[in-house]
Image 1 (cartoon, helix red, strand yellow):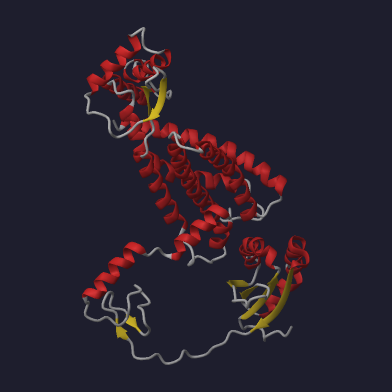
Image 2 (cartoon, rainbow, N blue to C red):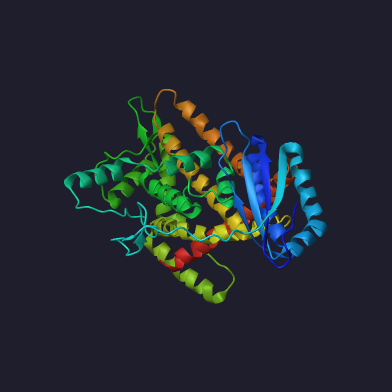
Length: 438
């Protein structure tokens, strides 16, 4: 391995040929390893490259480290390299082969650029088909009706393949999407925050549309049955509805099942809010909360306004909750050190999956409440979806962090406990805030 003369910057290149079976684990490990190497004395930077592999060939990852001079490289090879190489060998054994060499930075002049045109959108120089700043086509022509039609059809019917690729990876391959983002392969997928925002907003919009109540009906045989609420109910005032409920609850001839449901429907209208109060132990805040509780008792709406206010604030609460959980994860993954942003990306992806799962489960429950053939199969699907969630989170943690099964299970249990404690605290803050905003 030839050294360059002292005083000149050198490039230390490490090329890794990887067994296809461990590509995901290796890509999750490599960024942390590179950060550990560049933390050694004399390093000025590093770049990870993923060259394209021909079909049938093993994937390759190439890392080019920049050092101040040949003396810095020699010092690294003598003092730190044995420890770094031992760590890689312990993790991957013969699944990865390494090729190392030393290069000198090339100093070549850039080729003369062709005459550039000016982008009509942002005014930047364009030397290719598209503007490097805003992405608009460099050559524009007078718009025809055909262009307008094509744009409309494209906007309505075309879905970026990134959407399907992102959703497929998010649902079926726990942790892979996070590893891809950490490894720098981001162009093929939707950004984590945008993905989370789209799915969470879609879930809350769906929650507002789907029916969440049932009504009691009596069939021709006089038997009480529970059926989903439909949209063909006659228009009635609130007073008329309450009067009918009171009559059902008081009439001895009413079937017992119907009377039980009527009693439940009566409570939100009267007793549910009679004793409603929230106290946190701070006199000044307790006074404000008692005033808000008084408004709820006077409204006699069964807490409907509070529920609506809380649901409106729920998306905002998650933007506070997720960073807190990412900070909690730092306590469990301090060696090897992980960046806070990596934990945050994992929780964004996990919660995007969670909201997507909640939306699917809500749709399944709605359909399962109908009296249709083979409806029990849908209830089984809903149960299977419920079991999939904890396994999904466990698997995502194992794929992203690379710990063993037992250690991952332990951290999963501990983080789950912290998760529900922080979630409860966040929800309490949301309820208090929603009450004060009434």
